[in-house]
Image (cartoon, rainbow, N blue to C red; front, side, top):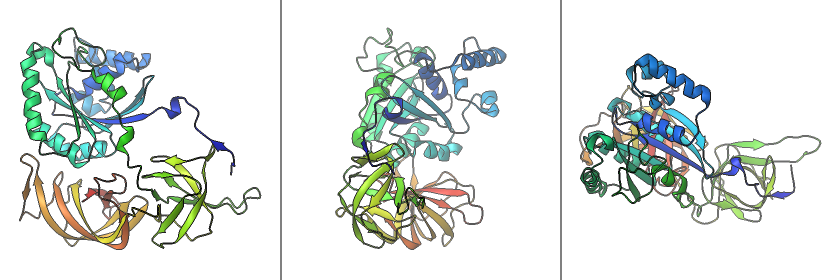
Amino acid sequence: MPKHKTNPAPGYLDMELLRFTTAGSVDDGKSTLIGRLLYDSKAIFEDQMESITSASMRKGDEDVNLALLTDGLRAEREQGITIDVAYRYFATPRRKFIIADTPGHIQYTRNMVTGASTANLALILVDARYGIIEQTLRHAYIASLLMIPHVVICVNKMDLVGFQQKVFDDIRANFLTFAGKLNIKDIRFVPISAKYGDNVVDRSINTGWYDGPTLMYLLENIHIAGDLNLSDVRFPVQYVIRPQSDKFPDYRGYSGRLAGGIMKPGDRVKILPSGLESTIKSIDTFNGSLEYALAPQSVSVILEDDLDISRGDMITGLLNLPREDQVIRLMVCWLHQTPLHIGGKYMVRHTTRDVKCIVKEVNHKMDISTLENIYGDKVVGLNDIACISIRTTRPLFYDSYRINRNTGSLILIDEATNETVGAGMII
């Protein structure tokens, strides 16, 4: 493998990536907002623009319906709603972006969990005419549950309330009252009109009373580098690379994505579950060896010692080790129409480790509207969020979700159908 040290050259591939999700009730304008972001930031190709222009004319819309950029499914376009999670990619000179446009209906809460699970930021839309509603609270709670570090409340359709400052201020005050019960460290508010572009990419002349940034400025400049856990080394081994070629007869690299911390050659590390220790000899990529690697880079780690390491093992630092246990308590969002079965057996996928488990107990369910725990109700159905306890056949090496979203999350899989039935956040 390459022996030279390299640092990534500046360019598109090395631009900072911001993943964000949109959420809100039906008809709050999520898809229109994304279409406006893409259109005003010049991220739409001519053929895409021609396509949505023709589709808008066929639907009888007076103006070009920018929501059609993300409403890709035929059923979505016909109903004017988002059913599945629609992903869009675009870039500005400052950042790359991945957008997850998630549904607003209550029955699609599971889709929001899917789209928000890897997000750095959540955009929650509020219709200025109706203010904070139950779905707003539901989406805010899910953003808090998933530990999304940054939340931007976009008060949309300000044009329909005459751009009144009082409407915006009242919505802001009402949300902050509820948000005091949540674990969201950074909340911003922006008054917008997605349809006409007010305060989306360009500042609006209709909101002279608003002195904050536009939405695009926030997306381009909000600080996300400090959101990752760079203190605790967590490297789940995904694959062992052994070329066994004439050029690399003895090469043995442990590849995967760094889930936390910083690694560099010369560092002493511990391998779990064996507990053996070694020293990092080099850190390789396709383009050469690195002087250091930090989460969430994908690399191949070469150790000084020839150890028995396989997929599902974890390389860590010598200090701040992850917890190792078979009995695990977690918050789970149930994603399947078949309810969770106490005593039922499921597969658990945690980082790169696959084990079997049995559900021991449903401790309580969560009433998202009131944020109160519901005891006694043990039926966990589609879109329910509950605290459960499981026992795995082999230990997992994990952190609590609030410390590390990568090593603190897992999914439950039905053994019979191989379908993902639950998304869990370890407490």
